Length: 236
Image (cartoon, rainbow, N blue to C red; front, side, top):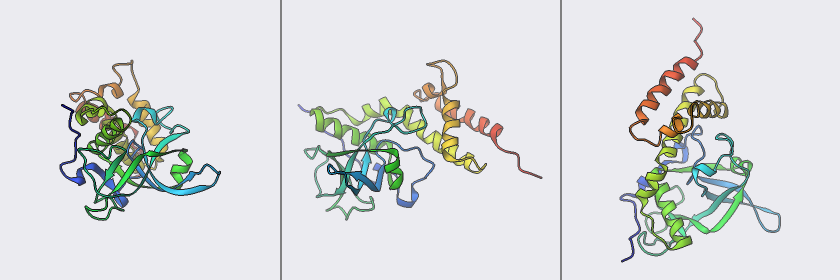
């Protein structure tokens, strides 16, 4: 008997942030949706499209800070409603409250068979309008694997494989928000945090320890203490 595909309990649980609630300090991550991205056509012209990032979190950055030169994306546009469980494997549904969805009958979707490579500069020219939650990213990865292989990998298995990088994204976002108060630019704060996470021997680095649920609260406690040492003293 074929394994059944997963679906969200509530469409809202797919999203971490939408529209104005998207934090500019959050690192670009798998499943992020950008609007008004100038995408190259085969004839050399450009068309503004809404796209979702498909690359795995570990493949997005060449040095832990800067995005790679070519990012794989899927075009996002409105579609008809369909079953999460059966068929429609070529797309990741983006139902309301996604901004461009029109109720239950007309969700949007990212289409895996309409993919484009874009540069970081092209992404920067657009506007990030959605960040997926871990639930959303796991569902997207499940559907993408199903589309290309017809193999069903349960969504929780993606969580088991990726919870460390999800936690790292949250931690970097928190670090950047704290450092912004000290006047540190986002990219510089990301570099600071990445360097701190990678201190130590492989396997014992904080970045590695984030894969262990037992260690995460300790790493966050260490981060809070370290940020205090970096904070610029306020003049009396």
